Length: 134
Image 1 (cartoon, rainbow, N blue to C red):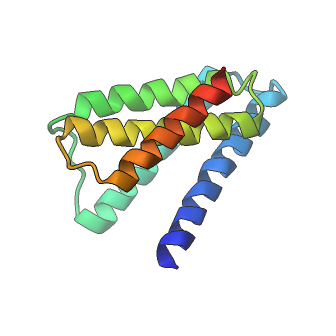
Image 2 (cartoon, helix red, strand yellow):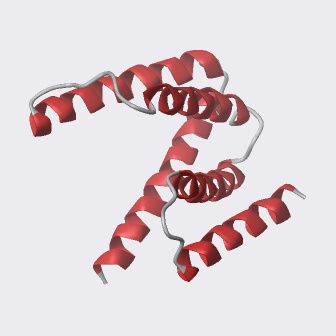
């Protein structure tokens, strides 16, 4: 039951992210790049505060950090730009699929064992994304 509730909470957060993005960009009150930059700075401040509170410090370097930063920039600016023309529901579905595929690919790159349920989830996410974009 706990896993179901955490999954539902995560899906609600992804959907809310899409709705808030669309609301912010639909009216034309702010451009996608400025909105993405505000989100990036706000996220960095919150992550820094959580890191200080929970770990006692912020570590900026480390293996894979550049790839993570590049992926975050692509996500922030890509989706901010996309939400100027996408509906929030469609954006949320694309985001769900891409996140699932990215997590699966990260596991493959790290040479993690792939249980059948994880492989099935990735295949369903990829098939859904292909169908949606087709």
